[in-house]
Image (cartoon, rainbow over all chains, first blue to last red; front, side, top):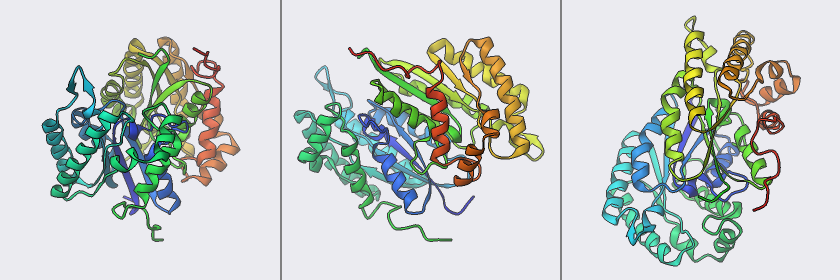
Length: 204
Length: 204
């Protein structure tokens, strides 16, 4: 293994995938490019899938990460999900809160046992009723992450009240922002003390 | 389903992943951005995995594409692999040619039976001996693709003899090119008559 061979799987939903971003980078592409600019040898695997709930992610994250971490490398996983759990289909939530909590604990607990893990809280979708549910789920997940000892970056409440975010969503597809919105999320991640690749990489 | 909801899975190895590209787009990110600029509503899933052979891809492509095509959408798959089959580990090829041929026929045949499918031939790696094997495998795959009726874009021979490609690889990591190299591949794909998203999308 080359000593600095960092490989990061970003596992999440459409906001991780970068839906609405004409450049196709999303926030994972932007934080990865910034890490490379800071001198890190970083490979980013974007495993965001549109419409995925915590249940969908529970079913696939391990197999997909295994296929990408088979080689000797320094593995990392960044999760971000929850918004689609709070979608109401035929009156019921796609994933009820107790199940969403169980999925979070299982996914993030298992990931933390195998490699460095972070969680970026779910993002608001621009629907007032659903966004309230997402903000509450974000707060619940935050407590769970603290119990697991996994750093957690809450974003839903701040972004739901941020006019710049609303403008980016209006310029995107009405649910997802254009690139400007993803750049705002990326800046929050890069400036977060828990983020692994903010300080310039040491030479050597 | 929105009528123009195009979703493309790019399934391949490190050259599909975009290894060596500081921007992290690779050629799939560039062809996807060009399609969006031409007016297509296009979601790109980059399923390139470093070091993957045809055998590795045979084991994962269906599960990974299934997870991304669960929703109603227009699905497409673009494959590109073969270079890692031709790596010599301990004197033997990682995947012997008869097995590589079988993998190609199974993967591409099964994909074509389910959705629109293209194949971008394997890329050269900058090692003269291996590149000769890759060029021969590329020619073999091309014949197989014709038998299957799947459009195939051969690139290995042209790129291996192209000084601009060699400069891009030298500016990359010595095996993979920097972004300029990926831009050259993207241009070849976009100008290829078989590519689905070159003409401007019709309004409405």
